Length: 257
Image 1: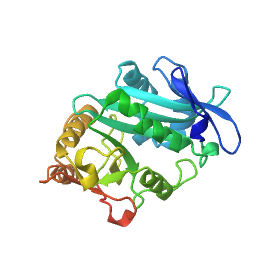
Image 2 (image 1 turned 90 degrees about the horizontal axis):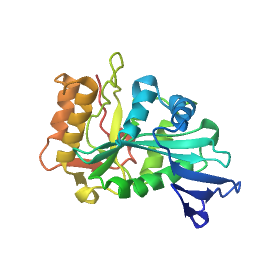
Image 3 (image 1 turned 45 degrees about the vertical axis):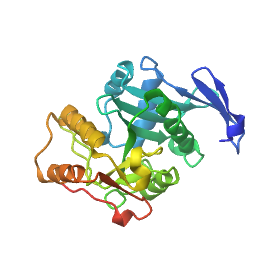
Image 4 (image 1 turned 120 degrees about the horizontal axis):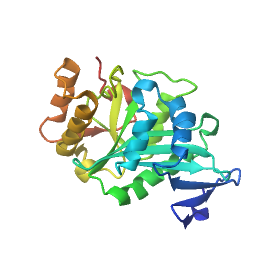
């Protein structure tokens, strides 16, 4: 995107694509908009397996409750091309980038980077979070495919945008009865890095508060199984949680059931 071509306008702004000259709009989508279902069915469901994805009703409910944000890149016909979903936890003041996805035929056009600019800009101004986290797949545990994209390329994408991995053997909790936990995930901190993050670690307090609420909300309890014990022990280590560069995937922590 050509930043010089952007103009603030209403709830979003206009951006001109460098190669095609197409004008696209970046805007927030409200919970009552019919575009929520369009984005869910046409973008998110293609990019995430069912165990990783909340229901459309849950997505809409979070937006209506003021506990979420949905930002989309729209073409000049009003068709969503890419979207990012944020979930806000006011107790821990942690903002989770729950999902970011681009239509398969529009990948590698800079749309994901445009959304990352919103996450590091407008989202920060809206919530003033202690930290902004995201869950991504560990390259050693997940395969690249045509629908969900290149796992290593995704890691490099976040690296370019200044993200670091929390040194935790992280897994996504079961999102609903019957859904499986998703092991082999990374919990990453997005720029701007929180507090002393630039010095190599983050305060474990907000992370523990966020994860406690997350697991209680999804699974009804904080687990005591071996994978859960390994995760919480890593959260509670002295001196905070180390941040790791994304440049060496083999050095990143890996959770297993």
